[in-house]
Amino acid sequence: MGGDWRPIHTAGPQVDPPLEPTAFGEVEIVEGDGGLQVRQVGAMAEESRFEFFLDGIEHTHICGYVGIVPILHGYVAAVIRQRSDRTFLTWNVIEQEVLAFPHALLRPDRLLELGFPREALIDSEADAASPHPIKLAEDERAAVKLHRALIERRLARRWADERPGEGWLLVDGRLAIEPALLKSGRAIGLVKSHRTQYLGPADMREVLEMGCGYRSSVFKPVRPAVGEVYSWYLRLRPPGGHDIYWALARIEGRAEAETLELVDQVSRWLLTETAPLALPDPRWHVLLYPIRDCESYLRSRMPTLEVS
Image (cartoon, helix red, strand yellow):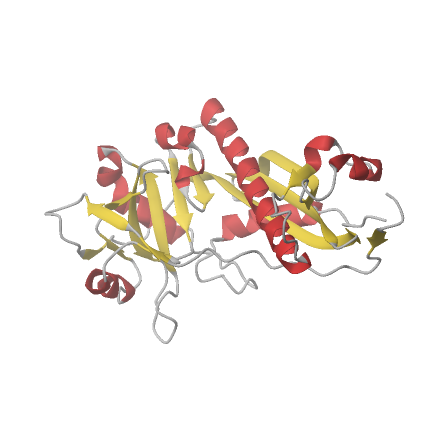
């Protein structure tokens, strides 16, 4: 590596993932008379038809510096777990250790001797004209997060291509991560983040005041760069005494008439998935147990991230 390589022999500082910026989105109400309504979806279903569950994780830390350039070592992984007789099995998993750094400031060849294949060396594409070590680390963390999204997309495509069984797939996050999912007809996305607000103030207030088991009208987000979906808000648990976003999820399904026909049924499946609780995770109010199982499985496989 040369004399300017300074490894960090402790755990190394972690770099927090960049926050998605807050934003406002445009929508078209596609259910009813075009105005937003909230309604009960009915009692939770006796049985959920969700059989497959997709989630991914990433874990990173700075393992050293070459000059002032931080080298970010990470583990990225995605898994689809399959539920059978209340037991979770692994349908498919993709995982990879990576090194992220700006290739414009540091030639990848210098890091090959650490034993990483070239495809694991991620370019964070930093501004070479004014490097700042903290900003470089933030850019590297964003690059790893993007790499995780690509892995999740590959795994989603495998599922859509093979279409195993008759059960449905629940994706932790946006359904539009992979266009093939939008065509499958048996996949739903559950979005826990609300940094993009899709409704105006009056309509959003109605949503934020919904009780457990209530949903909004179905709407279509206007996102030219993303595949079309139908979406609706669903309150998973009683919100009394909690934050306005407590147990509030935004659900995504494919933009077809069938989604409008199944919206209440799918919502009842999701209410059924609220038990058992995903404790002790602090996100348990909106994190469903099968998704927590995916995360726990991947964390159990996470290697010790050490580079010397």
